[in-house]
Image: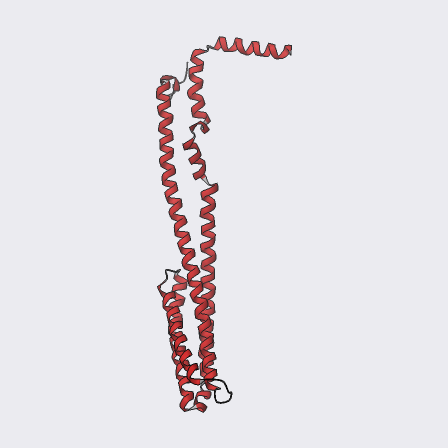
Length: 246
């Protein structure tokens, strides 16, 4: 007694089987479309994060340059009376200009959508940077009226410089870590897009013949109907006899 099989290909016509295969193909196409949309969205997000982190690195390096430059301007203004060729007025003007650029770089860093660790570091850096900028400009201006007093405050400026440098060095490391993380995420997304399940499903959806079990059964069952078991056995016997005769 044969076991009951609720899903028996012999119960369906060839047209029904073909419709079933087409339905599978359409379902695969729909699934591929959804997966492709998600993959593209994830890749776009990773690329955007990498771009933002790269911009942050640019402004961070720019801010580091101004951080070093402001102290150099103050020392130049303090030593203007000892060395010829130093235009104190020009030094003070450059100090004021670079102070504004320093603030602008920090403002841009604060506006970028970065990781929480970088955002927190930027917020912690800003008060120290503002205090350092104000102190540098005050001491530089003091050289015009009280040079000895300005020289006495250089150690105070150096202390502020070192405190800000430590925070900014840590901030640079955080930005570099975010760049590495974003680059790795982007590489993983693109690798998954090339070698993952999505391309395989796409090939199956485009070329249904790559689904061997379904298509082969749809063809095998009609062949069994047209070729009874005895005819098939006789054919196989003739094939074996022909092979032995070779």
